[in-house]
Structure formats: structure tokens, C-alpha cells
Image (cartoon, rainbow over all chains, first blue to last red; front, side):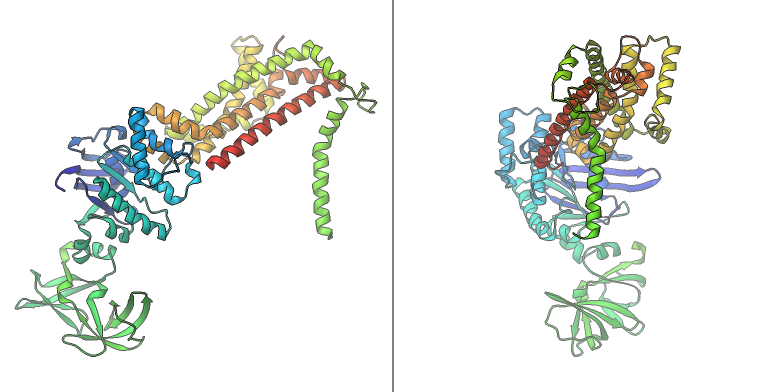
Length: 354
Length: 262
């Protein structure tokens, strides 16, 4: 995973006076599954379209396989896009759809046939060659779209919210299959989504994009456990995001105010006194019946059973915090409980990041 | 049967009688031995035979076929290209142009007929087949544009983008993807142009010259002296042709829809 296959250099994009992308620089490596994740309108799809050439960057350069393709038309770029609505040509059979790109590139018929057969096999669509897209289910259409892309033998496949239109169960299934397919082919998948679950389960790396900026670029695990901004923490998984301050630092311990009466003692990590944002994942607050060391009290205000976990909303002083509990139900609404915190899993972001 | 249902059914029956009785009567009288459209005196094919020897009518029929054929092909091509241009490109006053396209559709035909005639007079174009063909092309184009544009508006842009992405040239994107997908609109626009041209009376009346009589004009001049059974026979044949064409296209379309879902 050392060869850079796609490189964006200082990419900016504006539509009129609206800045969609702001000076994006990003290296994407050969064989990785990278996800552009962000809320709708954040610029993630525009980024993908700039790579494919369907959109022109206002500023900056695009490199694919080391070649500057900034001014090349989509046909000349060694990437293919899987569209959100699949965009299968409705007047062509599955075979002709997959063959379209090969025909346009004047691939000899014999070779084309071999490649199409292989692609059909890879996406498990044997026997559907002569069907029209309208005669296929959503999942099957998705497979045709993928086959149409991979048959081109390019090293990069761009997927634009490709699982979005499928129902939940099929979506889960396809997530696994996509990941497997990507490993098998050994090519780079650049995946665009607003669905954080999807990003976490499939990606090698996630690029979190917000308002045209890259908020964080990391592996799913790093992003989840060490979000660098409040936005990243909020967007990926659930978080308690608390604006507060560090009142004092003494002997490698930073004292962070939770409420007026409660201060948390957190191991110091180059923190500075003053205003900070405290981020705690709900599972890093641990509820107990009886007081434990350094615990504080709270009143259960809401109790939601969610299968594997129980989600509590707990009133602590003038704040309400989210607490996840993995044991069976032992707490009731209105009950006073004791909470302690996994000190090493707390994230503190200084004022400047806000 | 309750009363509401009875009234509903009666309305339907009366509507159908009102719509189709004249046509049925026309067909019946085309087989009538008597020359008068009053009593049915006996069954005969005579009027159909006489039709084959009516050189004026045959000549008019030939003219109509030529005019309709040429004007349909030309107006379909021009209309389709215009619709694509209006759909794809932005230019100053595009909204105004979009609105202007509807004007030939809504203004009275007689105004269009007179204005075309004055253009031909000013340019010294001799009235005849060319002037008729030009007129028919002119009034057909807006219908083709409207029809093609409505299919274009329903066409997701991703189809063309996918084609570009897969390496198609502009020409190939058009011939292999865009055109096949808008074909239903092109065909219905063309069919509209064909039928409009074939039965046009008003505009043709103003722009026809000697020796360029069209079928509708010929029929119109015959019935000035009363409806004769050979006109009935001719109308029946036209009716038959229309039914065959429409049924054929309906079967084709529904088969296509069953297969491809659009």
C-alpha cells in the first residue's frame, strides 16, 4: 500500500460564489478501500467527480497513476464510476451494458468476451446476460454496474453512494461483498457515503469531509477512538460533546469541569488550562449501583433498550449525558446511579480546534 | 342495479354513441348502392372501384404522401436537434426562446397560413409543392420539439455521464445512448407531425398552388357539391389505415415496455 494511485493537489472547486471544496490535498494508495464520508452537501461527491473528470476543478491538479490528468476528459482517465442510481443503459442487455466500455475502447471481440465472462462471474450474475436492467432487482442492478466498471481493468473504481438505494438487509449483504470483491481484485475503491456505519465497516481509511475541508483522515479505528475535531466525534458514532474548561493541571493530572460541582481527573497529555471541548463516547461512562472510586452521581432520565446495549440518558447537575450499558437491565428511570469514566479514552480538544 | 350506477352506465353508452355513430354511419354508407346518403339500398364495392379511377383524387393522395413524408422527416430531424440544443445549452434569453416555441402551436392556424402566404409573396416563391412542404415543416417543428423535450426532461443525466466515463466519444454518446433513450419522444413527435401534415386543410389552403392539391383540399372541394359515397369510401380507407398503424405501434410499444420496462 505504498504506491500513490490517485493524487489530489490543492483542489478547490466553486460553483458561482459558493466554495464547495477548499484546497484539498490527498494521496490515495494502490489497493486500498478509502471512503469519503460527510453530510450531504459537504463536497464529497464533487471530489469524486473531479477524480473521474465529470467535474472540473476550479484550481489544483489531479494525478492518476502518476499522470497529470487535470485537463483530460473522463474517457482518457484510468478510473470508472459506479453511479448512485447505477445508470445502467435501459435499452441494452446486461451483456451489452458490460460490453459498452470495451466496445468504446475497441477491445478485440475475443478478449472482450473473456473479460465480460470473468466480470459476470466475479459479481455472480451468470445466467443473467440477456436480461434488461428493468428485469433485475436492485441488488442485481448494482452487480451489473460493478461488473461494467471492473471489466475495464482499471486500478481505481469510484463508487458514488452506491448502496444508498438498497434496503437495509441487502445493503449489509452488499457491504460485505463489496469489501471481498475489492480484496480479491486488489484495486483501489474510492467510496462516497454519508452513512458512518458503512464507512466504518468497509474502509481501510476514512476521509471525513465537512464544508469542503478534510476534517480527519485516518483508519476507522483511529477515527472512532481519537477523533480530532468535535465534528468528527459527532459524525462517527455517538458522543457526549461537552464544552467546558480545564481548571488546573497538577502532577500530570488535568482537572476538567463536568458540572459546577464535579471535576474529572484526567491524565495530562499536553493539555493547557482554559476552555476545551470534552468528548466522551457513551460506552466510556460506566454506570454502577453503588459508588466506586472517583464516581459521581446522576439520575436516569431516559432508558432505551436497543438489543445488545441499553442507552441511558443521565442527568448530572445541569447536564444530561449519554451512557451506554452492556449488562442486562438493572436501572430504572428516576433511579440515582453512580458513574465513573474510562479516563484513558477521554478526548480533549483545545479551543483553537473549534 | 341502483340508480347511480344506471346513470353512469347510460352516460358512457351515450358518449360512445355520440363519438362513434357518425363514423359507423360513414363506413356503412361507403358500401351503399344508392348515391344518396339517406337510405341503404344494397351492398356494393362500386365506390371503392371508382376511387381507383378518380385521377384527381389519386393525384391529391400522392401529393399528400410526398408532402407528409418529406415534412415529417425534415421536421423530426430539425425538431429533435433543436430540443437537444434547448435542453443542453444555456444562452441569453433562453426562457424567452422556450416560450416562443409554443406560439406556433397556440396561434390560430389561419394566422399562420396568412403569414406564410405573405412570406411567399414577398420572396416571390411560386406556390406549389415546395411552398406546401416548407409550410408543413414550419408548423410541425414546434410539436416535435415539445414532444422530444418532454422525454429529455425525464432522462437522468447519469446515462450520458456513464457513457462518457466508459470512454464513449460525443458522437457515440449521442447515437448509442441519448438517441435510443429519447426515441419514444422522437417517434411520437414524428407521428404527430405526420398526422398533422396529412389532414391539414387551413394552412394548405393558403399555401397550395395549381397542381399541388392535397387530399384534404380535394375532399373539401368535392363535398362542396354534397357528400358522395366515394368520399365515404376514401374516408373509410383512411380510417382503416389509421387503425392499422395505431394498433401496430401500440403492440410494438407494449411489447417493448414488457421487455425493458420503459
